[in-house]
Length: 93
Image (cartoon, rainbow, N blue to C red; front, top):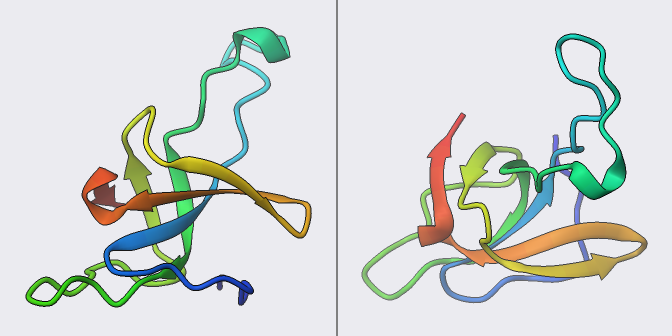
């Protein structure tokens, strides 16, 4: 379950905590920090109410897939988060 954050997104914005990047391949090869890809999966921490005629369809605790370069990075209480539009979310897993 997602914990409460001290920030409330507006309109169709969603705050996502990215999943940890993979540090090893399936074969056991360790991937250096410089070669790691940005994660494209995360957990919704908070969601805004939506636009006038379009309510937000994701809720806190949902695991989602999002575009590779989606959102703006922010750090809140030492935790790395992304704030993005709901349209940047591709699927709920």
